[in-house]
Amino acid sequence: MDGRSRLRVDDATLDVMDSGDFWEPRCTPPRDLVEPVSVDPTGAAGPTKRQAAGPRWRRTSRAAYVPADVDGSVPEQRIVEQAHRLPPGAAVTGWAALRLHGARYFDGTAPDRTALRVPVVLGPGERLDSDDQICVSREPWDPHQVWVRAGIRVTEPRRALFDELRRNRDWRDGVVGMDMTAAAGLVSLSQMTAWHLAHSGWRRARRVPRPLRYASERSRSPAEPRMRLVWEVDAGLPRPLVNQEIFDRRGRFVATVDLLDPVAGVVGEYDGSAHRMTARRGRDIGREELLRRLGLEYFDAVAPDLRARDTLADRMRSTRSRARFEPPRERAWTIDPPPGWPREPSLDERLFLLEMARQGA
Image 1: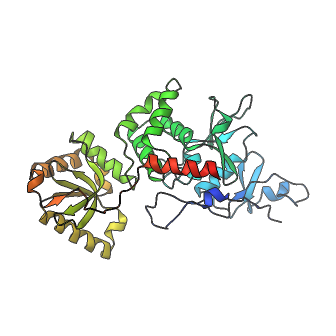
Image 2: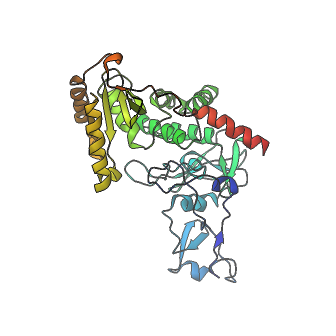
Image 3: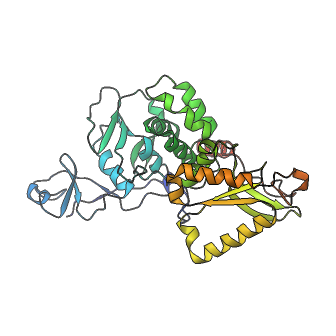
């Protein structure tokens, strides 16, 4: 007996679509998550004391073990291992709860790739100390804010994101967190703004408004808001449109671009690793040429540029200085869709419909 206790992934989580694309903002928990077990003198329900000290078992916390071949770097597995320690009234929150709600971006690592502790909130009168694996909060919370995902008690998305935004010392990380939570279809900007207003007296709540001020519900990858912030904050340029569709004057779709300055006529694109594949790169070059023919000025950015913000900001300002600033009627391009072009519902509309469906279930 290897003591593996397989956790059942709940149906609500499995309903999340996962296309397999690297930038797909949603994900599903792996089906083979392993719950820690305690030492069992008989070796039936867990390892004996001698076995636990050997190479075939890995300790996850005090007196809790999983088989050594269980990958503890998988975010959901790491959450399961720490959630096992929680008293009955506690719940996982912050990045870990958002991950279990299906937000792919929250993988439990900081921008420098160091592992984050699993944040949890305790119920009244419960005791558990923080350590290098877990971060404990004793702030008040309503039992109605607790959902179950992958068999684990987690705070509902708004509370989870609120806790995550308050954790971030770098407000830019907060912008990325808000953008990626919205991309996953979990929390809208208006919802998070209302939540903050109702809890503005909480510790570190003052960290929340600035990320919300610069956030967007239209981002598709974490790098996009970081590039957008260089444009808007470091370069001091007007707020751009995000993932904006562009059409020619005959109503034909041209491209959806990461960043568009609709006044100057500037397009900005982030080139991630997927863009550098030969076939994809060829399409990107062709698209850039088409956009330039329509009179749009163009710049792109890669990962090192986001770490050299001043240099990238200078390049952005230089690009804008070369732009045409054409009046709308003289442009060969437009952001106005042709008749019959499908309108994408807002995130608030989609969340309202999901809530209605959940209540009717």
